[in-house]
Image (tube, rainbow over all chains, first blue to last red; front, side, top):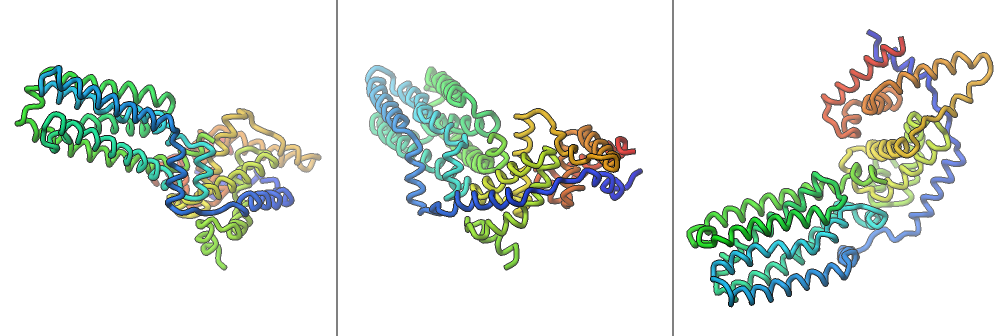
Length: 254
Length: 167
């Protein structure tokens, strides 16, 4: 067996042509010129505002319209349906809150020049975390408004409503995270849309027999599901931040 | 100031420290790129791109331990991209071996290059990092995103293939 040293010696026959020093120095000056005058850091507040602006106005408007649609349909349902059926249907419609953000959400994890530019001020980890936080806050506000509204309209204890609405919502969110984690970002909006629709259909199925699934003695199952989905959601969000902020991810596409 | 201190300051996007990092590691990165593309101009362009990208997103460097590992990761991805786009291998560097005396050298280079081409992408990458860049297996594993044992396995396979081709 040839030893490593011998192989190395033979491999060394393949010499490298010396670099052109002028070109090397010109390259250095070019980079220094490129970054030397740039403002290197901004405050966290300014960075967050910059990232909020990244999400287009149309996404916010769609989100508002979905909430309005949910409020109006819930008002209509409560008059024309059985009480538990209305609870089940409202629960099934909850994932619609997140589906309207799918486009902006998917775009947030597709790194292009904007992201590289932003990464000169803060790391990619900061960038991904900031965007997840923005979506998280918007969802929290929308979901809270929806839960408070429903519990008031259906005269149900708020804890019950949290369990019924957050479980389908969490499942839809986990689905989106998993698509980004293990699938491609191509056609993300369609995949996310299809998955959300599937969650809505499954929970709609539950609302056909609400006496079984939404009965008071089933609340412990819903609470367990809520805890479980929240945990998986947290883990997937953490993994997504880790994956999205690695260089393999960014530069393989450059 | 020691290079480690410059590396620490470079993380804060200090342009003066960038200069030191550039001067210290440029040759290594250029040589690495050259082994992949076999063309001086292209290798220098790629090496410069490596430093531009390194400066753009320096914070990811902590994931790779040493700054040089981080530079190699970017260089590896850029070279892969270059292969994908060009899909051809340059032989420009062989023009340097002219004249009768140089003919045997030219042949040696061709033998080595052919041997390297017979390796799989992963094996070639690991062999280049190990034998030409003199990196430790641990660092190679970090750069390749592999476990230590997988890296050793690929290196062993690469060495066996090289032994066969370079006999």
